[in-house]
Image 1 (cartoon, one colour):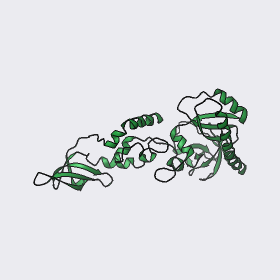
Image 2: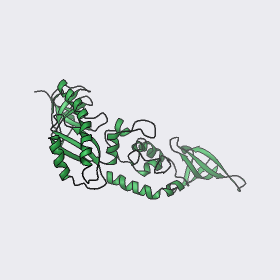
Image 3: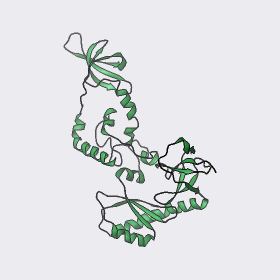
Length: 301
């Protein structure tokens, strides 16, 4: 009997990775057919197979059903076309019902035993009558799945403020927690429009360099700290996190004025440092919106 291997499978180019067991000799990039909670689906091996014995798994993994055949791939491509038509049909049907839901996407399982319609809504939707009509029209199992703003952006796609395709559609398999503090640590303007993505939530890219900023900030004094320099004592006026440098405000020799000078963090000694929450005017102007955004971020987790 062949040794069971751990196989990582993706169903979309920037989708989440799921794990299955297999005794087949599969290579990265090969298409496979698997049974999931949604039904029969076509996936792709996303990395080289690994020995299951290397992992302490709490549950038994589902096995990969088989390698995908040319017919499987042909059916998958046809399903993508049919899904677009089904979405149009479903929108026409939904328009006849008094339901607050915006359809965003449609997917068929590989065997077409089930069709999944994804939608967004600000409230709970009663779609019992709608389901009956959809089942009659499509003659298969129907699933109406409510998704959040981030998932909608991932499905719909678009271009970010950086001018590149949205991270969620091009490279993010799953969403990580993002917070206002990440923007503050990176000295970004706390403006709701500047730090929000196409989904209306905080930009996922705030997370990318967050660990680096947190590590460097631990070695830097806070703004307002009293420090000793080669030119005397002064107050930290600003910091350059990535360069690990600070600008210090120091009294001149006459004592009736000040001058500013930059120092590497390693060349100064902290005398007194208190953590003071700095809130700039722009943040104050957006305080209510930011509080609402932070609340939504917590609900998304």
